[in-house]
Image (tube, rainbow, N blue to C red; front, top):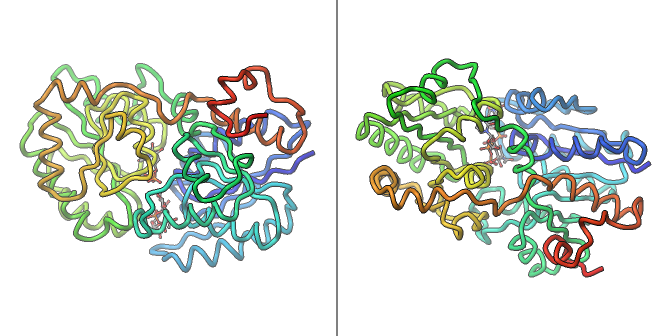
Length: 396
Ligand code: UD1
Ligand code: UDP
């Protein structure tokens, strides 16, 4: 029995690892799957655990108000030392680029436990953007033994860094698995305001907004918020829905600048199900989040990315996402263009799936079984030449 310990700590990791946990648990005779959370996030993590019915086997419960990177890194590193020693996993699986990811990977390395990295290989090649995620992801890649790259661009990044091609598997991004599982046509919201906005006969245009990146704290966030205010004042049909991240650095400023605007709705972080169903009904997404850049293209929603660089170039290349930076002037101009130029909007509203087809978790688990010689061959549908070329870097 292969003991796999799935490790995560924040909202996005939980959303993207939930399909992997579900898939690992389909093989109780072959795999012993356990879940360990750092709880770097608490409420925002628990929302996801509840939705996907995951009860962690280990919970470090480390979150503190206003924690800094040193707090999180040290508590995760020492916390997971004890968990890994107790659980004795054959494989630790981490996700993405958070400080939980990096510190848990370091703990696995110190104990010489094989490490699998899901959502590996995304890069901006800029040390401080996103901060500290770019370096968290790169260092996790250095420590990992198996790399699950969501796209061929991510695979190529890893190859350029000298990762052996037989250690890289192109899986697609598991966020698309989670998304496709959660979107429901005709979804009825528990929040009456959302039902009113979405199903209202007057043609409301919902702008869905999120913002939380560390490198945007301070002046860039203020610019973003003033841009939202200006947009909402310019278009009476626009309703901005902005579920505000729990981080006090963001809440304080968002409330100060936006609270008095009648058509800007600041809410608590939404559970994943209402959130993505609201995205599916939105006109436009404005965000600095990583995950939203992957989800919105699948739903045919244009995304204005309020950052200067992105480690997710595929949607930008395909034309559904645009990097607009954080200056108020630019955000307003780019939004206005999409409000007023129907042709431009339509060109960006093409539904594309550069990040996956909803079967990433299945691929990841099959690859793990294959890699540990639990299955000797991959299932037939993984073995045609074309599929191998698409999803494998290895030729066998
Ligand atoms: C973290 C990740 C970031 C990821 C983001 C997703 C790091 C360094 N940052 O950033 O990569 O994109 O999560 O959202 O790993 N808080 C709560 N309740 C919660 C969650 C957060 O109160 O459920 C508050 C706490 O005061 C906490 C603060 O938010 O101290 C910051 O949380 P933290 O995880 O350190 O940073 P994020 O900005 O959330
Ligand atoms: N999300 C959510 N509720 C919200 C805002 C976002 O469920 O109120 C989801 C979103 O669909 C995406 C993920 O959370 O899957 C993104 O998380 P976040 O923005 O915190 O982190 P990032 O993607 O930037 O790492």
